[in-house]
Image 1 (cartoon, one colour):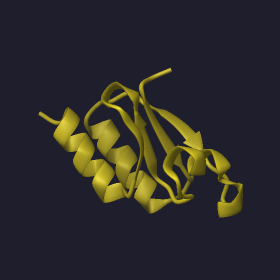
Image 2: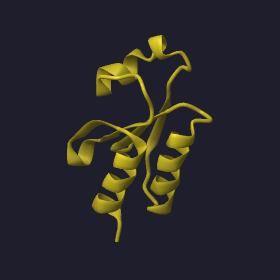
Image 3: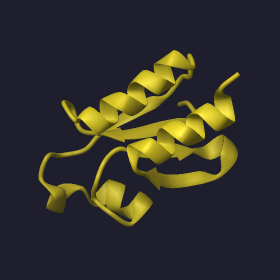
Image 4: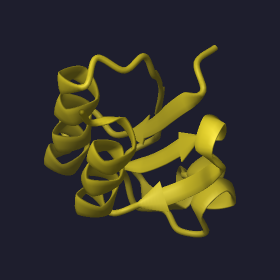
Length: 82
């Protein structure tokens, strides 16, 4: 298991934005697909306190549930970019 986990909903454009950045930076990550209904997203809610996606966990840097695609992309660029 990698240290980066992305909570994802297939087809979500915000999730795709984060995946593109992860791939651009050549980072290994695991994906946890969440159910479509928000009320079933108990795992992502436990991690981040909300049910929206994407949510990023980066155990190597103590990130336990970062939400908002723009924040995640900026974090990835700042932390792992050249």
